[in-house]
Length: 144
Image 1 (tube, helix red, strand yellow):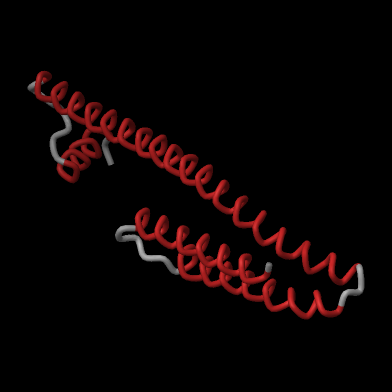
Image 2 (image 1 turned 135 degrees about the vertical axis):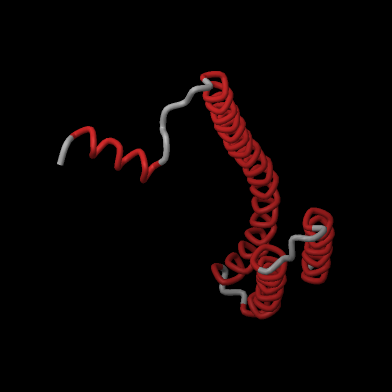
């Protein structure tokens, strides 16, 4: 088969690849570059905003978790001191308090962190956190 014949056959298959209108080709290439630039910028901005949101949420949640852990730790220390001093009356009184505090925190984590819905997420979380703090206050005041 002749090379020219093969080239003509390719042209028939792919269509005429030559462009008589160079302006049309340049415009199409510019449109492609513009679209790619927009998509690259969109993806980059999306990643930056996602990271910012994660960092803000993480620092906020870390503080809440730290404060809650401190409260649970202080209740656990009271129970441990009772056990250390072999004060059975104190141990008997503090074990249910420790169990109740741990249960309240477990319920908060299960309901708000693991299965919380996305609608009204921030206001629901804040309300649940205030509720958790109030329950822990109540548990601690009942143990005194």
